[in-house]
Amino acid sequence: MAFVLASHEFGLLFEALAEGLKSRYAELCSACFVSATWLAHMLDVLPDTGIRGAARVFLLKRFISIFKSAKDTEDKALSMLALNSFIHDPEGMSVVTSSIKDIVKGLRELKRSTPLAFQMLKLFSEGQDSSAELWDHKELVQIDCSENGEVLSLVCFKDKIFSGHSDGTIKVWTGKGSVLHLIQEIREHTKAVTSLAILQSGETLYSGSLDRTTRVWSISNEAIYCVHVHDMKDQVHSIAVTNTLACFIPQSTGIKVHSWNGGSKLLNSSKYVKCFALVHGKLYCGCHDSGIQEIDLATGTLSTIQNGTRKLLSKANPIHAIQVHSGLIYAASSSADGAAVKIWNAANFSMVGFLPTALEVRTMAISSELIYLGGKGGSVEIWDREKQNRIDTLQTGTNCKVLCLALDANEEVLVTGTSDGRIRAWGLS
Image (cartoon, rainbow, N blue to C red):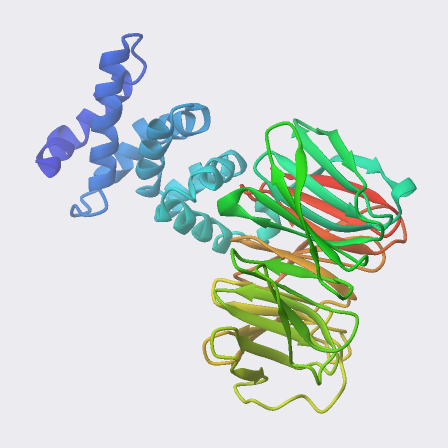
């Protein structure tokens, strides 16, 4: 049916549908939009008789306009489906590229709802000489919190940002447009708040501190309030939580696992752990001697990851930051061997890539498409996760250290905390 309709008078129907899309009558316009989307989508499976060119001439710019302006998610998704039919030929891609930034923005909004959006984003990235053309980070706001010392920890949750400071203060911010509004400031910890963690299911915030406690905070619409204080019996330098336990780096060697019901145990007591990530019941620890160790919390099994073996590197090269994302382990150490960030497969321990940055990386944040590296010199490097190439560098303007990074749930706002006590927010457009 689609072939007969599209082939009639060599695509005459496409011209009629384009006219219908201009109609002031909503019902007629909607019917033409659905029909045009269906026929455009069917072009991918129909024999190529040249009618694609007619569809491109009459409909493509209209689909782009709808995709850019549509407020309704269904309309945006339908126009995306139609656009996908034109981007696989050079002439169609040429037309689409003229509006590439607006289209990419819309695809990012849809990528959590449909894999097609993610596939189209990947195709656009591969089609650019430099993937930097697809990314534009603009500084939204800069806030001076130097009276509270260093900004040691950041975490985003829904429309709020939580920051932990070296004087023991926790601040709660809400983002409105290009401004961060301080809605609460609390100082119940007596020493530095080194880490913050969110338990998504219970809307609960956990704060770890050098005062040897972890505080549990209930998150409400207007404020947070402390509901429990856990004595960790050791300084808490970094923390990750589940419903039943907390893992943290103590002042001494190893990593501590603390049960919320009481009691704790020390794992990997022979190693100085610099950083760790907790994913699906497994701890991935970055050690002072450059080893990456995987600890299964259920069985207590310990494995050391290095080039598909279970041997440690012979050369001491401390790992300062570690992240696990989509089955890959990202570990940052010094750039002495030309690969400051190494990427490992968590399933078989093989190295699958590296980022040849000269930055002394101290913190990382990873989105579905980008890798953010923060370190000395006050800069944040941005790398393409797929291509593993650097696409941009954000400068904070001061010779400080970027100590913490956080991304909002939509991966559209990056927040940085620095050693000079400043919080910056960058918007992805």
